[in-house]
Length: 184
Image (cartoon, rainbow, N blue to C red; front, side):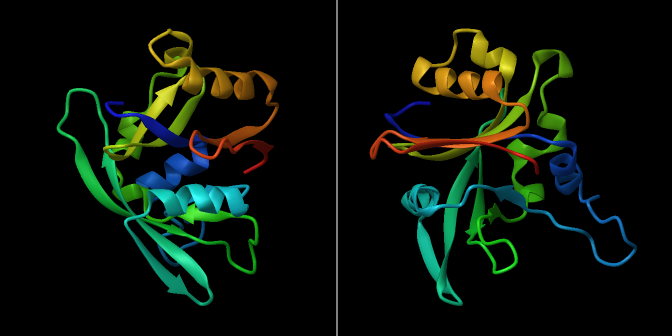
């Protein structure tokens, strides 16, 4: 993180997420299966965070669709920018937004997952004054002392308290934060 950190979002990586990233999430023979990353709780504050990251907002049936220039940060590689889209909840899933096409985000590729020995893996999206970035981080890396405590402490606390999948966000500009322990 080069510039001043504004906000971040994280979600624990599950096997189903990896199947989506590999394009193998379809259990039936029809279609290719979902390729989106589900984000809950999609409340007003979460939407404000995504809106703040957006470079473009398109109305979609009375809801806003957020376009984000998402830069993948992969150790030893040149940063790659993906035109990412965050979709609002649907009537069927009213508290669940989603990041479309995670299979197109290089930082979220299955090959970028840390070794299992490093503990739980998390999709990590952050915004600083220079842009919006994506990476996968591990529980071990958060404990290493290499992360600023404003990032590491809330996520590690969430990991420690959680008995289920974790998701959360922290917005340093508004002071909003949420930590969700839910089933996927």
